[in-house]
Length: 159
Image 1 (cartoon, rainbow, N blue to C red):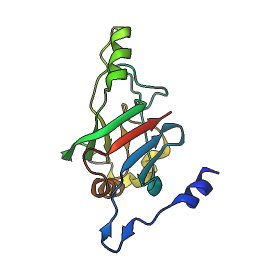
Image 2 (cartoon, rainbow, N blue to C red):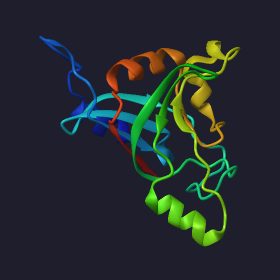
Image 3 (tube, rainbow, N blue to C red):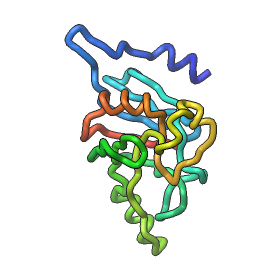
Image 4 (cartoon, one colour):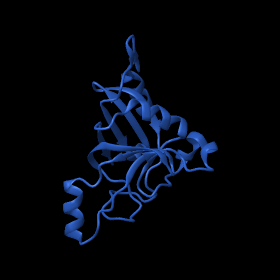
């Protein structure tokens, strides 16, 4: 059903003047889905792997992907995971929650490609959740995302 709905909203990723960039990234963890949006329409969608433990990240090392509103705040073209876009985790809400629990919220949540030696897995890497809390795509998909998502782009991560 979700696939049929996505098909209804897919927008053209190119204009006569060049490539349209995403103005929002939405991750739906329960669907293992990353959407690039422009003006509320889906430019691209990707199957992703997220944190190996279900639920919302609350502390460093819990192997969960956070949930909430963030931004892409920097990029690493030479990441150990091919390329990586850094997500501005933790936000104020994450810090308050961790402080209340007396733990560190952690950091370094990324949208990234595959580690060296695993490139050949391609999109099949997303058949199970294997990250420590990041959002992983194939290297080919990371190249597309890298080109379509600018620093400062809002990121919404949903359960």
